[in-house]
Amino acid sequence: MIAPVEHAPLAPHCTLRVGGAARFFLEARDEAAVLAAAEWAASRRLPVRVLGGGSNLVIADEGVDGLVLKIGLRGVAARDLSGVVEVTAAAGEPWDDFVRHTVERGWAGLECLSGIPGLVGATPIQNVGAYGQEVSDTITAVRALDRETGRIVTLAPTDCGFGYRDSRFKSRFPGRYVVLAVTYRLAPGGAPYLGYADIAREIGTTSPSLAAVRETVIRVRRSKSMVLDPDDPNARSCGSFFLNPIVDAAGLAAIDARAAGLAMPRWPQAEGRVKLSAAWLIERAGFSRGQAAGPVGLSTRHTLAIVCHDGARAQDVAAFAHRVRAGVEARFGVRLQPEPIFWGTIGID
Ligand SMILES: Cc1cc2nc3c(=O)[nH]c(=O)nc-3n(C[C@H](O)[C@H](O)[C@H](O)COP(=O)(O)OP(=O)(O)OC[C@H]3O[C@@H](n4cnc5c(N)ncnc54)[C@H](O)[C@@H]3O)c2cc1C
Image (tube, rainbow, N blue to C red; front, side, top):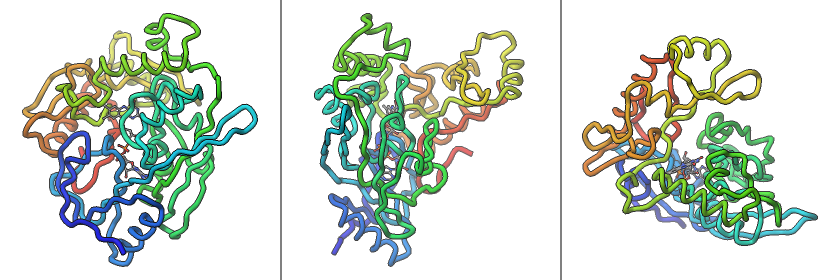
């Protein structure tokens, strides 16, 4: 028997700290509770929204109709296979505690993903990544409830459709799966990943320990207000608000023409496509760090983060994001796509 709370405020559950209430709210601490909650909602024809750490969410001021299911499943288990370790974490494990756990044991593979907020279960949703590592590099299995069939399934990476900040969970079947646990294959005694110039330069040695890479990543992230720190005036964000756009050769030529000689950063991708810097585009479209519109604005330390201050509402966030996107589109002809997920009657179109 489950007993969801009614009209539960959601702002305290998300890092932007805006948004209204959930019509029903329940925290599930084991798989049986997840199944019971899904059945409870299905029998009432209520939509279900799955909540992790709320660090990639913009929740409408009017709140969310239906059941918000907070994932509280805990537990980590590892098994040695020849030369590798497979470690499975329940979806409700705080991500950064889990990364620290792997680094402390000398298991390479997640060190560059240190300091990212949120819970384990959300990491496959947008294929969480930073400094050249993505969870899709190490995920071997995702255990999930398929709400369409009511069954628990184990998905292989090839079933997950991972892409740049994307997966089938996010774009193809949003809301269908409740992630229960994720398995990562890590390298005991492996060398840390050092493919990202900023981190390699900051470390200053060519053979650092996993712990040194983790510390450096967290230090660099902190300097950009990209770790959660309640004392930081940029604390209320959901990280990068826009994805870096990926364009084809014709798109690039059109943007280059508009950039008129400016040295626009670019990174080659598969199939002749090119990734651009959303931060660069925003800055060159005339927006600057710290620029505000009432109680919301750009972070003073990261152009891609939209931050909330006292009195902010979700609609202020959406209006400001819309303004930034319109400015970039007018200047460069590129339509930036938001990275966070919007819940309820809110969006930036
Ligand atoms: C300061 C800051 C820095 C950040 N830096 C990065 C970064 O470097 N790289 C990066 O990739 N992201 C970054 N993010 C974004 C965010 O932390 C990640 O996307 C994170 O994985 C979201 O986890 P969460 O538990 O908070 O998810 P939530 O915000 O609670 O949910 C996000 C989405 O995932 C779904 N979801 C969550 N859990 C489950 C589950 N168990 N099953 C099914 N669906 C689920 C939700 O329904 C929602 O659609 C940052 C955010 C902040 C605030």
